[in-house]
Picture (spheres, rainbow, N blue to C red):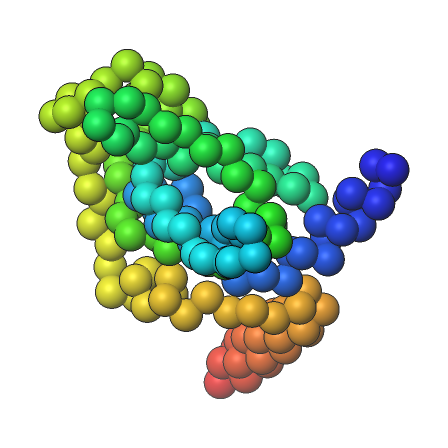
Length: 156
């Protein structure tokens, strides 16, 4: 049974997922089925924890406050019902888990925004979806070209 779950999770890993970090403000688009209708529900909040980053099924905990009530969602990143995850803003954090944010409300819950360079913003917009084998082959080609350039420079 466990092997089937791992195999399914690996098959789902080809989805486009941006680099989500703790402290990010994200917008999660989930497909919800109500009766015979399907719709996309958007949940916007702060990522307070990431668990199992190296496993076959990592999860993120997203928290938001609505009408003074804290709402948390624990979402497996490769869940088939998740359409996409948009990273809206990065915050400057020094902890891997932001559970202390549960006790903060209003202005105390405000996080410092991390400034991003234009190249980082462009890289986030252009999340590449490519199989791991192709990615490894391209990386090997880049390494080979770099070593060739160094060898030609050394000869000069």
